[in-house]
Amino acid sequence: MSSDFYLWPGFLGTRATFGPDLALVLILISSTLFTIGWQLAVHKRYEVHRWMQTSAAIINASAVLVVMVGSFWGFTLPKIASHLAEPAVWVTTVHAFIGTITFLFGVFVVLRANKLVPQALRFKNYKLFMRTAYSLYMFAALAGVAVYFVTYVLTA
Image 1 (spheres, helix red, strand yellow):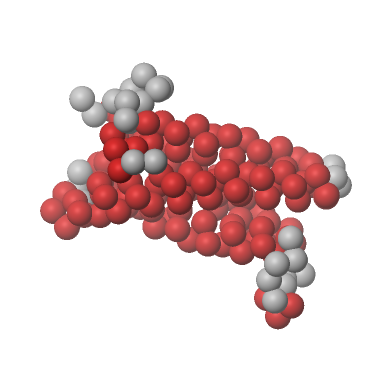
Image 2 (cartoon, rainbow, N blue to C red):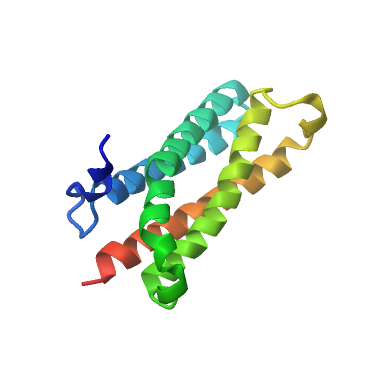
């Protein structure tokens, strides 16, 4: 993809460009998959749950790494010092902070669930870690929807 990726026209009918529209759609898909996966665990369908959560985490990681990191780095980070009081800048900055913590924790949980971390880092209390990761993710996703709304829907 070219560096114009962030400037391509959007497809959701707002002021957003392609990147934010794509990120929003991917986050809504991953949120739905995480919720379906949670219900699978409730019904003791653990193997399907693991695959569902892993798939959702991959979709989320794609949105974060392909769209959000570059967007924050290129468009928000340079404005923090001089424009932090603007709603789009501070909401995006708070979302980036929450999202970074959630992303790192969620990746760890997924790696652990797939037995891809050293034995010393393998937690036993799955419910606590997975419920925490899910709750943090949903909070970060809601913050991301707020970023989209404030940046591309409310502003003229």
